[in-house]
Length: 169
Image 1 (cartoon, rainbow, N blue to C red):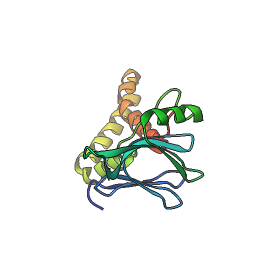
Image 2: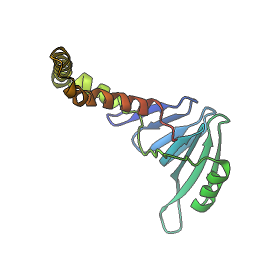
Image 3: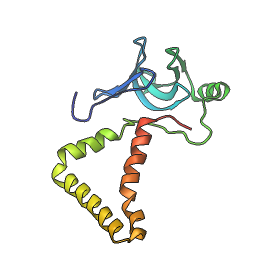
Image 4: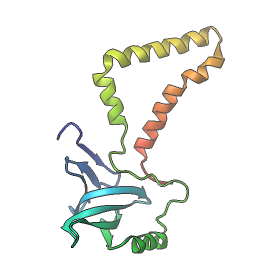
């Protein structure tokens, strides 16, 4: 694994990884999809697009559209976008509120852990300073400033929740 390579497993056991030449999706049964470009998670399905290793007559790589049922470990591939969108609509796999498209690792907590581990000469004093500042404001009853100081921890909590639950709504 290189520095920018990553590896994540969904709650249904599907493995996503980027070994350096593009995102690969490996289902529980061992089926591998290479060169995945964009995807989202919804109702135990992975819906996305990618390219194949084959080339068209014009020399471009052939684009594919897919819907993967993680529970059944089955995948449907579609030759064009219109058929793919119609299939998504018929199966009820289009999120109603928010489609969270991904093109790379969805777990931001690894990045935070990296900064805490390797940036500790800066991050640890900042965290200690932040905590001491909140305690001081509480003791001096200047509570109106606490809402500004809580932006950082609430942002970290929000990123943690988004990383832990990558599905669309």
